[in-house]
Length: 364
Ligand code: NAD
Image (cartoon, rainbow, N blue to C red; front, side):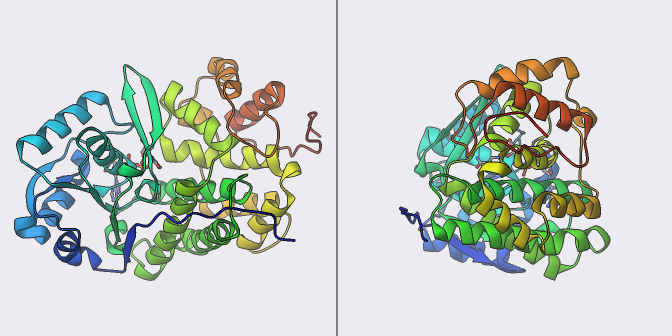
């Protein structure tokens, strides 16, 4: 039976294909933008220069100071640069850090955004933004920061190092996995989530040995687009709350944190989300879903432990408290003792997380 649902379309234009970055001047023209500020991280300054050349007269400058979690001082400097240059829009080229900075500029100035994503994080498909001030990350949702046009060019992802390819791909899979059981997911969101996981699961293992394979890069980016659009349209649950706390309060690397936590969050929630787990299993090729995920993690040599990515063990109690403060909507209630146990397992890198058999507590 189809459960009752509401599905709302929020339009953004998506242009996909190898070499499509060369259409950026025409795409800017379609939006009526003639004075774009190009935004990148320092590491991808060369990409900013390449895109500035493609844009020709439609580029007024390049700001290459984007940093993880969008520090407010950086956002302020970038917004001032946009004003000083008389920019009429921002073009972010890079991962979630560059796109996050463009969103912060949009928040302050109202300028429209174009995005050219080069990781699988998915920020380009969401109205979500974050800003960090004195170590405190503030997040919000505003449709004005959602990019108007997104150009996916798989050629720009061949330079992603193997570790980030896998971690970022699992970051994307995590959006879709939580979308499968989101309380506000429509049938279309669920189809997109399952197809997004399938496309990433089919492409990530091969990218370890052939990182320049444009077909595989395209499949991974197609999956990331679908997973990112799910993240942007439905409410996330325990997994995203846990990663938000761990990244924001303990400064853990974003993509790797998602990769480590995902099997544990799904082991916690699975008992209350049988349809989502069945869809996950189909997307991963069949079998018991947590076993299929574990086998996939082995094939892509995924990060497994919070300890290995910088989490201090003495912080686990505090993290459990923060996760249980203002819980996100979730198929299973947040149970503090169970979440503390989940964090311990993730800290130690248990390869086969212990699934909960009861919605109300007590692990098998
Ligand atoms: P990132 O943007 O911080 O990139 C990590 C590093 O990889 C950077 O040095 C970057 O320059 C480099 N890089 C990116 N693409 C590359 C490529 N193709 N080749 C070589 N190097 C490349 O990492 P991320 O995981 O994409 O983004 C993380 C940030 O995005 C976090 O701050 C997170 O909170 C945010 N985020 C926001 C949303 C949202 O919806 N608002 C969604 C996902 C992530």
